[in-house]
Amino acid sequence: MALLSVENLRIYYNTPVGQVKAVDGVTFEVREGEVFGIAGESGCGKSTLVHSLILRKPPMVHVGGKAIFKGRDLMTLSEEEARKIRYTELSIIPQYAMNALNPTKKIKDIVWDLAREHGYRDRDEVEKLLRERLAMVKLSPKVADMYPVELSGGMRQRATMVVSTLLNPDLLIADEVTSALDVTTQRVVIELLHHFMEEGIVKSIIFVTHDLALLDKIADRVMILYAGKMAEIGPTEEIINDPAHPYTKLLLESLPKMGIQYKKKKLHGIPGYPISLLNPPSGCRFYTRCPHVMERCKEEEPPVVKVGDDHYAACHLLGGDSSE
Ligand code: SF4
Ligand code: MG
Image (cartoon, rainbow, N blue to C red; front, top):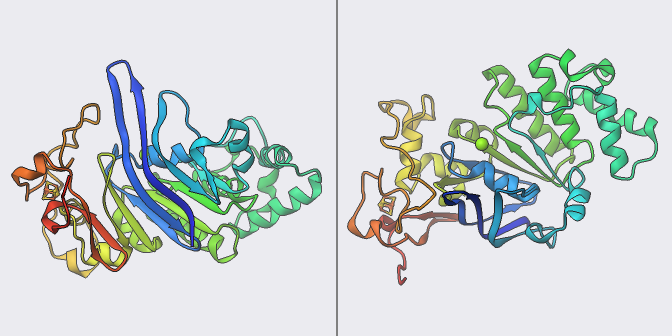
């Protein structure tokens, strides 16, 4: 069952020189009980996409499409309605989680403010919950009485994860939460996310990363974004072992350590740069870098084609109906 259903979503930025089409017609769903990965190079729109679900502030504008979450369109919620569901139904661990906590407050006060805002009245009960969750992420109960600056980077990361999940959100968004961490701490964070799912603290997770190798460890399904558009979506295993889109293939080949299939290949980055999203060309957005580019790629937007069970990609090489 879909917990979140995103349909043809368009999120742009208004700038003095025009609209930046950061997310330009993206469709996907996040199912109950799954970790859904969103991957792509920096600037592909993945952060914009997930942040638009939580809070849209100028210059970010919602231009079109829907994001149905538990029966409501997140794009049409009032600020008050959005505030109500934040932390309790939909929560985000921000990209710079280590520095996300208010430095002037103790962890227990940060948590109490949050809980009170959502109707909790019993401070002892909230502090008991906080201590339980701290134990769950292997932090001492003393952390409750500490200021964020008194904690090491890794401890702060875990404390932020506790704060983001304290009120049992159905959907947890983790935006590049592991990118600033060493490999050991990355592993701990991924284990904790799994643990949150197993314990029923969260129902589903959207895991955003530029690192496909990480998705292999955590995500059930993955969506690859390129320049604001979906390039490919499907089960992680299939995307990694049998990618259909030329961009996904290049992304995988640029990885230093990926399963057996890609291990022996010579490493190389993807040549060229993503196009400007200010006036993106018609046709396939990847055509300026694609080794398989054809004439039609420059004019016709590739249709989304089914390439496997639950697996889709948008590329002219894959055939499909292009009756536009
Ligand atoms: Fe390459 Fe054309 Fe496919 Fe785009 S549609 S990925 S340019 S082959
Ligand atoms: Mg980002």
